[in-house]
Image (spheres, rainbow, N blue to C red):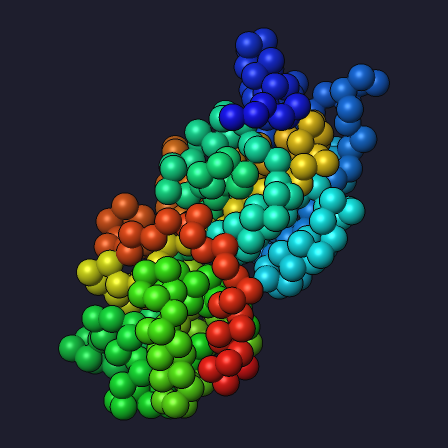
Length: 354
């Protein structure tokens, strides 16, 4: 493996008894403060392209700024659009960091050779299954695809064993999807990987023929399921918890419930949100501090307790009520294979769902 300047710097820091990412000046689990002396290379500012919404990640970015004094210039947008912009801009991009909603978008950017290799000290914080094989991106949180359903409209005995059943006549007009959402697109990419393009096309055209109910995102799907406007929908697991929080009630009090497909069905894909560092920033101490912050206890706890995602770093518990990530009978998908995002988007368009 070729050692980038960042990796050599991380190794030198480790030898000096300092954390590999971020300086050890504050010694906290928030990611630490980078040195800011005249020879540190710090200009106290980084640029982040975020495929994650402002409402979800702004508190984490604010905590980072307060802890380090480093300004974060953020450009928010759809994950797929952000990935496409990075690919178009190439090495001219002003971005230092890509914070993505899913592994597929990270893989698409990595495939263009735009990311720096991350130090082992960063990668080793996260299990192999949730990071890039070549070390060019790392997962920050885990998110599980699920079917949300209304308990008054879908008896437990009628819950499908496979996501493919949702194209059958009994589900006509009852299932909400968000085909322009990055998580849905990553799920469809995973279906292509596991079941091939022909079966995936059949699934998409089947949803179209079965009058799938189109929504702009996961949150509207869950809200409509809870109100009984639609019987079910394909979403990420944490939106049910977010709705309960918004309504000031317990998740068990909602009509909307999560159904995790059994038997390693592709409908229960475990994906990640994650981060990659652009090559131009591979020796930037401010960027190192930022990545360290995302994988530190404070940010991981925030994601677990406030957004109900799965923390990927050891020592941080999941939100109460969530099944353990290791207990889910998830499909065996290599997240590194979800990088063919462009073909997936075209396939969804061709199906008539958008």
